[in-house]
Length: 114
Figure 1 (cartoon, helix red, strand yellow):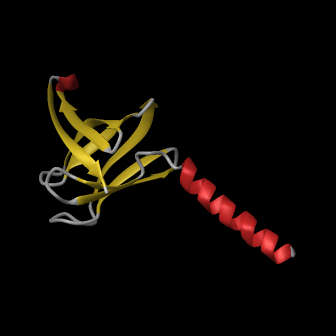
Figure 2 (cartoon, rainbow, N blue to C red):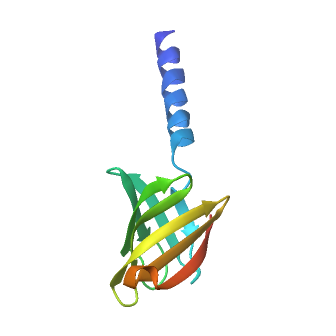
């Protein structure tokens, strides 16, 4: 009886952990067609490419900055330049932006959750 209760509790905790995950966490299809993985840890989120020409490359770090809003840094994998970055989540779409010169010049992409 104790074993069944322990297994039920363990299963409940695993499912609850998934429910508590931030909606930005997971795999995203980038505009170039590569897959980027966003994972939580250390009080923020890390972005790493899982597929494509630059697979395995870390390309960003973000922290929550409001409801479905994130801010941090984004690295262009092609040039290795790092920019002030932000993300805005709307359903299964994530608008990622990187800016220079205090936001005077920005580039944006829309990523889609896989």
